[in-house]
Image 1 (cartoon, rainbow, N blue to C red):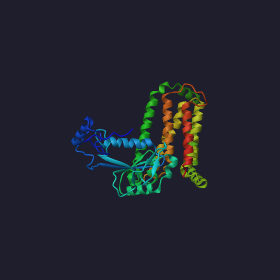
Image 2 (cartoon, one colour):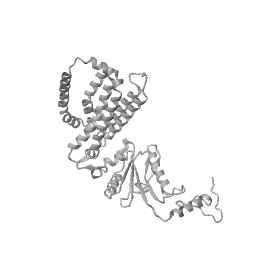
Image 3 (tube, rainbow, N blue to C red):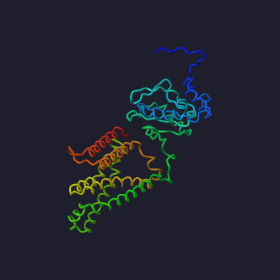
Image 4 (cartoon, rainbow, N blue to C red):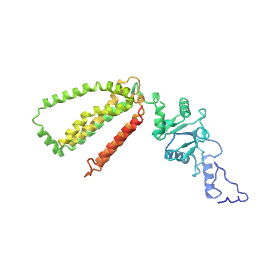
Length: 376
């Protein structure tokens, strides 16, 4: 469609100005500008955001950030960069390809000397995290040294953590102990209290527990306690050798300590839980088996707080490998599936496992595969 010639006395609006025309909308925006004391051409910007895009970044993350900024930057839905400004930083003349294939051109060169209030890093797909230009990494280190706050969006947090820009004095600590350790301890005891209260209320309805007591009534408490102590001592003694064997296995195979710990050591230390849970299911004590697995996971998180006390080089989690994030995300997803299955109970199952437990197993397989690909 051809452009119509301008009417006499009518000027064509230019970008960054009040371009809604001469109607009621234009007069409304003019009145809003006067009321707020703002003008699109006065150069007053309260907030400056620089955006760094990693290869194969999610386009939705960039759109969400920019759309929120444009609504906050102006009045009257004009989307002018009045109160704040933003631009995509990078190498001049280049563009960054999003995960959807859309290319976003660089708007401004990487200049550490230019003052930004924030630098937002939008990470990309995990296989492309190492494909970024080294100038990006140097720029982030320089602006971090200058004291500019950094924002990690999506896997951008992984990029910042990999550069060591989310560790050290920026993490809160109580002496050499991270503040998250007391939180872990508190969450553990609160969880135990909640579980105890819940079980006390439903104790009268657990007829199966009475049957189990009758079955094992002939076993004296002293004998049961002795056998339990011997078994626990054997497991604890064997566990003393596992860290050395695991470190040697990681070193000789080149699989990395994070992967060996997340797979082989985790499976070995979980063998008692596997045996106890299977035995409990076989005798019909399903809640005992499930409680064993969930209680072990709960107590394992408490161990992080204990480890932090004996680790004297600083906050514990500030010195761990970022690849553990894969295991954390998998655990959160698997617990979400468990909670869903607990809420929407499956009446029947068509295969050997129900959909909820099958999905949990699938998440575990994917997490192990991804940890293997990202092993360091």
